Image (cartoon, rainbow, N blue to C red; front, top):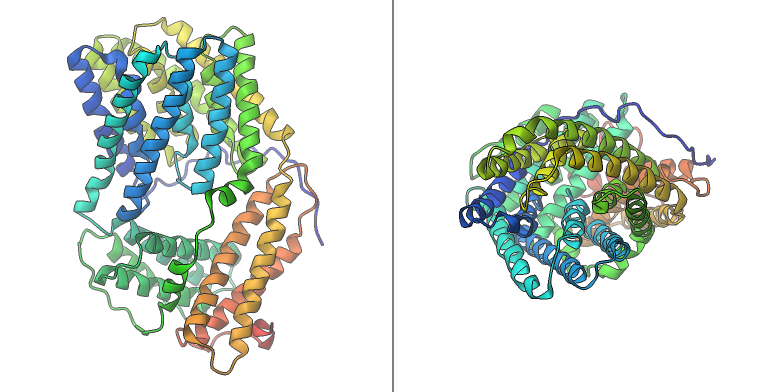
Length: 554
């Protein structure tokens, strides 16, 4: 039975604080290291008015902290180039057009492109918001064509410095991101093992464990196939996590957590007792590395409705701000761009968090402004401190980090010249309310009927992956590489199915979702996944009341 989509605007838990990220200090310290030197150099040269352009490159240091360093090098390079490209379009437009309507329209189109590309490439937080913040502000910066190359050069130079800042920790802990991802998978699997596979909360714990294991494998795959002792140990630990996921009743949660603690330790090399080091455990990695990656156009297609929402919502928010006579319509545009999440329900939650955080941030600005106005040094130091605070707090909840982001954005506007604090605060509050309201209305009005289609596709892929694994299990002597590849393919399909189902469940104005079919597909898929693990000899066969002949029948 399928149920109709429920239209609810939840308030419970929206402002609840979560646990800080295990590496909250890394982006916080990185942005300080990336922002402070360029700003202090400009301060010494008496050209703090150029800080907006160096900030464009400096804020690139916020990205890629969960990626292995080989993959981070590529990702950060693309982030810098993407940031400079957005600034280039904005500055050229600003130098050629003075009509605010044109500027808002270009800003909305840029925001939609940035949203689509960031979602498709899964660049991760802070995703498109920083790109849109910088490019939108650049649109309203007085500019001539002759100044554009120099300003872009400043952004590129600061971006290069951010690249170095982002890569520097690899000199000390070259496998740090992969180790953290593997530790997260082990801890998530330990939590599932605590339920013994049947206790309270076992279904969400199983989904969380599968997602964490999948993310850890992707982290290792992002590095490539270069073998070393640490990588081999991490691969074997992930196989142990997969074994525990398949047979939670036989897993030892304490041992899984012990391995996770060892990975999070400061030792550069690992000394772990990992049982069952089968030679055929990792055959599927070569298969996955050999698979062709889908094109960017193919990856962008599912996000077209969200990009359309972003373009329409940002444009309407900017136009509304202009109609109200607010002097900085790009703030309303950026507010709207920051709202759009995977579905309408999550967009509503982000909207509430944004409004609360910005209003409290404006009040914080009222307190900080007298200190920041003492001199230029105090202004720069306040901005640096707010950068640190924003990244340190953002992981707890978006509204908490916004309390630091908002006064930082207001102070940045004063790098070029001192401005009336009351006017700044009033404009910011009005633009926040306008952007949040108009942006959410656009999210509701622009339907995403592809969410149901994506769920149907994910269901089909999960069922096909299960049938492929079941067919191999039915063979007397399945080829090890094929069986391992089928196991990883099924695990990936199940993770994608759960993520797609969660996204579709919060979407509005679509046909009823096949919820029962999703549940049955997940249950059957995880039983077949467990059967493949046992068939490979990686897990014991006892204590498995849920697996029958039906679990492996195509």
